[in-house]
Amino acid sequence: MRIIISPAKKMNTDTDSLPYESLPRFLSEAKKLLQCLQGMDYAGLKSLWRCNAAIATHNYERLRKMDLQRSLSPAILAFEGLQYQYMAPGVFEDSQFAYSNEHLRILSGFYGLLRPFDGVMPYRLEMQAKLSADGRKNLYAFWGDKLARQLCSETGFILNLASKEYSKAVSVHLPETVRFLSCTFGEGKEGKVIEKGTLCKMARGEMVRWLAEHHITDPEDIKGFDRLGYTYCEELSNYTNFVFIKGGTKDAAIR
Image 1 (cartoon, rainbow, N blue to C red):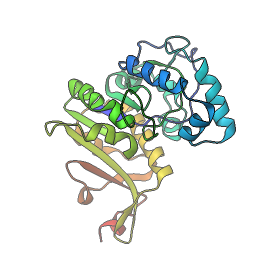
Image 2: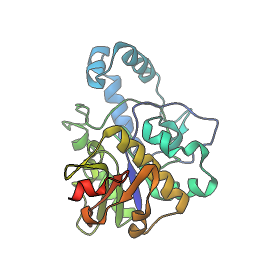
Image 3: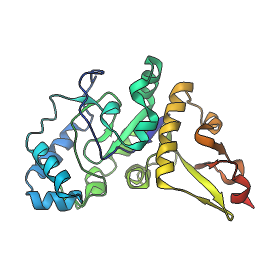
Image 4: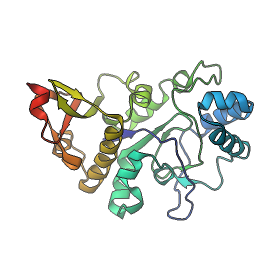
């Protein structure tokens, strides 16, 4: 089993807590993207990043001196978004780190596909950013089927806990022989399952933590997730999508 998750915009440098163990598999591709970004001016980068002046200036200055092989942080500790706060890798036990290192993969517009202990530098580049690089019109075309092929070489079952922006960089390239299982985290309302972005991020992070704590590898065991008030809903789930309903509202979703 491989679990795929999204990265986070906010990143930090943590070279003290734990050492990184490896360089990213697609480092040569990341170097091409870095060269492309470094060739852009401030105005172009600010437009690409779609951020305010303070954030653009910070990232512009960071980009100018970026070295992809020095002062690296383990990927699992480098991201600071809401999903990572609920995953809370900073307090993982050794067995949970070992589980994550084997099963968890972080999708990235810049690095492609990261193992938890791959060494990374803070960067800003979303998968849907309109960046033309290496003769490709955008990052989806730049990465092509590379990420999917790498995952397929590792497993026949992918648990998708990534956003649509990132998961489609993999899902559209998978053969039918690979099971791609997504999870929906929502609330039942008027016969529908309503998903809320913030709550979904929290649930995805909490599920990664739960999977690591219980060393889950069987798809059927994923149904046992019950954190943050969620309960698996058999009636709304199928082979490719498990639905978890929050707070006793299952009946509202299936009536």
